[in-house]
Image (cartoon, rainbow, N blue to C red; front, side):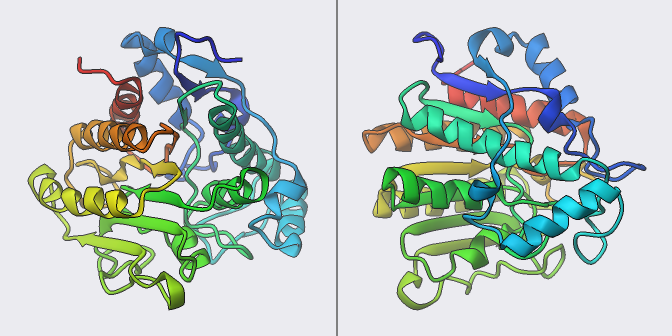
Length: 320
């Protein structure tokens, strides 16, 4: 149970820290540690409720993923070898358990919010937005956001969910899974797909069928910084205000911050604070306050630490 004076839950533990690939892979197992050391240095650890990771069941994983794919990840996890996609996402011993803990922790954060145990939650190692129902993609084995969205509907009757993504890479795994779903309100600001993996997310991708107009993709040119972001961000706010979601999910990848080795955007960590703060305000204005933040990508250790701490500050309503 989260204490009444701590309205923000943050999940920390070795089980999700282990979601990182070996042998110098950009998505290494160091990412949680660099964030948490900075959070402690800033005193943020004392202001949040620290939660332990939770393992997702296969039943939960299958709300988004094909059973055959789940079994394949299990087999590769046992052998400790193989590729889960075309080459970006290698298996390692225990990858199934690590990835299932990411999903379970995101679900636990959502459940705590829905139970009123906290107002908002942050899962640093989560937001694995490239995973598709039947395969991995872009360092992402299981799509935690996709599982959360389906679970909100199945268990809680929450239909209209907003997914907001500020990772440098387009959230294709979420977008295409819900492309024709009019109740998944999707807003994604990312580096132009003509210049960056996965090559998707053009402005004319607005949803299909009954969902046309319920998806907002805003590609940013390489080199875009805070001033460019400030020009386009009001489109997202207006979009969310129009559709009045019952639950907000933020994918807060820090690879959009200047200096990331895999992307060419030049945002500052201030953008992560401002986005989080505005989503908190929107969620509160809609009478429920529900916001689940997921860490997403990011491959510069300094940026991970600074960007995710700004997310936590935003969730806390901090001004300093």
